[in-house]
Length: 140
Ligand code: ATP
Image (cartoon, rainbow, N blue to C red; front, top):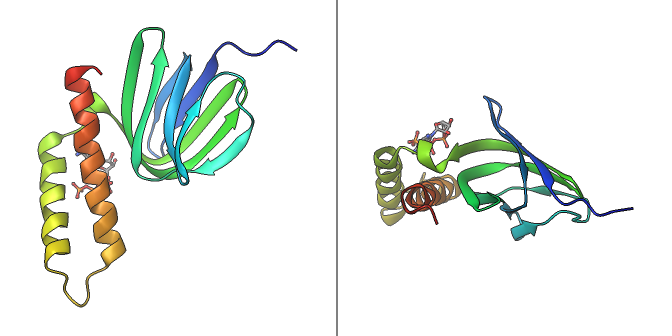
């Protein structure tokens, strides 16, 4: 059987469908590390961590910030069910910067009742949003 040459990529969150596109390749933040996917990839299911997802269609690369959820990889199809996902151009940089400052302050002065993991995830999400927002401006 011929190998597929493209991947039908779908990215949805509980609120909306963000992406439905035929793409050439993508990379996403799997729980065990960043995972690169080309057409014909071995089927797998994985959980997503907080990180950057990019996909390429021809010469155009698109970047999203994602946080949590699941991905199903098939040879010709990738379905991402993300808890949270934002396209680079939709990220509110001032909001992410404020969230980063709040998380930084919490982590710098750990109170006894501090939920460390929650503060760490908030910090990660804000840093990833800031990183991905830069991609929208530089079109890397
Ligand atoms: P904040 O502390 O600023 O509310 P958060 O990390 O707690 O940020 P989430 O719970 O991750 O926010 O997300 C709630 C909703 O707000 C989601 O729909 C998410 O896409 C959106 N969102 C959060 N931060 C941003 C941002 N900087 N730019 C665009 N959308 C954002």
